[in-house]
Length: 298
Image (cartoon, rainbow, N blue to C red; front, side, top):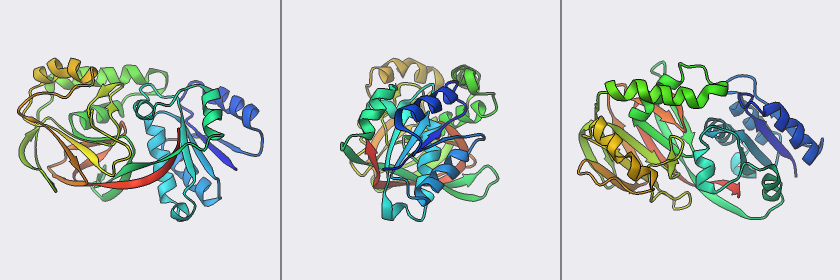
């Protein structure tokens, strides 16, 4: 077995984690601390190319997203299918919540010594990048076009590091009072919509936004994704319904729709898009479920 730990340098404990992991697992494995945004994608692709059997993302949802995209980009991935797991170190850790994974190092050691493997789904999004070019990228937890994308866009303009949670809250407070709903057309195998939308969420996991259960029916293992459409919903209504979301309940509103889908096309003019908490581009876009894409140790 060969372990590649991809460690997000933005975590205040990244250096300490690297030392502890090396002490725990030994020098025969790799402990790679990222230096710049996007480097986790490069490092994880190289780790799969070089034949590492286990890829471990040490960080939050953004780091996990980068690592998964790097793994999937390797030409050897389909052949080798290395095991994947995480050591949560973000401010929200919404995907870790869906998997029931702990932050404890001793629990990580148990997972890496375990044979408890499950195959989980991910989502593939084809969209317009920040320069308007066609692009594709995977997400493992949640995609959000609209309000969530706009919040992520604002967060990307703030300094992160130790104040990442504060940046997220600041972005919400400066977005909600002024956000205008966008006009979008949605087409999936079992749902059509054309009109104003506050937000269009496609969920693989159940939680996003640091503990908001946006999709109570979401499953990582059903070969499908959950489409959640917040249509002609006002900001005040959205805030009033947040307690239900926190209690893992669906929103009961005539303009809120929940559907299980295999794919969906979302057309709209430059609606901002976030994948796993990171602002990446704009609509129009297409989302497709990729069944049993990752072998996860939990």
